[in-house]
Structures are given as C-alpha cells and as structure tokens.
Length: 322
Image: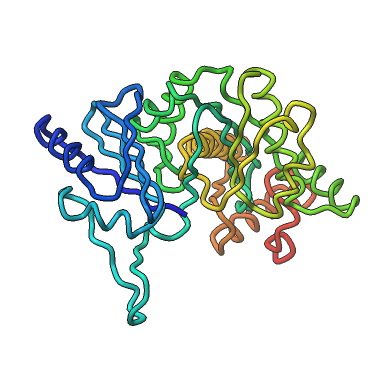
C-alpha cells in the first residue's frame, strides 16, 4: 500500500523552494538520485517508512509515500496537496481515497506490464496485451498521460495507443487476441480439463510475457493484475518466464507499464468490436446489460443461434437468457 499525489509546479523558484523544504524535513534521510527527464529525484526514509519525490522538467511533481502519516507531513509547505481525511471512527488512523491499496509498486528498472480487455463483455474478443517499459520510456509515457484505459474515451485511447507504439517500439508490445469463436473453443478445452476462466487468462498473460522476454532478453521482471491465485500465471510461464520476478497486485494499472498494456488491449478490443458491427450490420455494445441482451436477440432473429459463437462468449449467463 502506498499514497501518491501528482500536481503541477509552475515556477523554477517554487520548484527550488519545495526541494529545500523537503531536504529540511526532520527525521527524513534523503538520497538524491539522477533521473532522466527530472530536475531532481529524492528518495527518503524515516521512522514511518519511505518517500519518493520526482520533479519532472515539464512541471509535474510526483510524490509517493509508504504511509499517509508521511504524506501528511508534506501538506504544510507544498501547495496543492490535499490534507488527509479522517475516517470518522473516532480516534482512528487518518485515511483518504488514495490511501486504499492503489496497486502502485515500488519497482525499479525495466519491466513487462500486462492487462486484458473484453473479459466482462458478452460481445467481442478477449485481448491480452503486454508492454515492455524501461527507465527511458516510463517518464515519457507518464508525460503523455498514460493511465488505466477504463478512465479514457475510445477516441483518446486510440491516440494514446499510437503514441505508446511510437515511444516503446513494436518489439516492446505483444498481444494475444482471441476472437469469440476461438475464445469459446479454448474455454471449453480448459473446462474439460477441470480449469476455469482464470486459467485461460493466466495462459494469455504468460504468453505475452514470454513473447516479450524473447524480444527483450534483458528484462527480469513483470507486473500483472491479480485476478486470481498467484499460481495461475506462474504455472503457465515457460523457460524464460520462470527466471524473472513476477509481481501481481490488485489495481495494477497504477503502474504505467500495466496502464500502457490496458490501453493497447482495450484499443484492440474496440477495433474488433467495430469490425463485428461492420461484418454483421448490427450494433454490438460493450458489457453484459439489457441493451446487450436485446442486441443479441436481434442477431438471433437475423442469423440464428448457430452463429452466436461468432460474436459472443457463450459461457456468459446472458447466452442462456436469450
């Protein structure tokens, strides 16, 4: 668990004053480290835990702390940082929304981030993507605004996906795309072997990790969202994957590599949905809601149940309710 804040610092004088104030904090031992695209980076440690501060040359100030108590100490002299909100239990520890487990890891160096899209959508493909990020590309992706694809519009996501490819390069991206028909076949194969959807997802995540390790053999770590038992992905990793450190955490999109993967995956998913709309001349919406159910009924009337596996994931209860 960590607490993070990001804000804009406009003037060079303000940047200098903040750095001076940080270094003057009592009880914090600071180490200044070089960081590309940063005016300075400070790593600190005190009785309550650790702090990390990065002042990017574009004006973005990124602050991360291992505990809210540490973040609270910064409120007094850095304008724009919100004061912590008490939890209302009377005498309890201070907390805020950002103090919940954010998924942000204290990970250093290059790594592969993976994420999937389409898992909760009745129509369309399942896409699992991986993106290899480095100390050189990470700050550029942050500056571009790379974040969890669930918070982006389709138009913004499409532009960011192109930017990500330009920044990291084709060799740093891998995707497993399962069209509905192939997805249904694989799901049944896994089910017949006593396995479930999490095993299928783990196979996809492990596949993109392995592909990127072959293309980028210097990489020694990966980050994935924890969608089930940690052993799922570990059991699917092959020779190269078994040699790396794999981090799995809820809300892993807080790490820019995973966020980049989520954008690539979601953009591919949206593109495939648009293809389905064109191929069948019918609208297909995301999710699994009443609108989706009505669209599926319209499809059945036009094409028959025998072709439903070409557009939909048949293990969803939606399929049995048509």
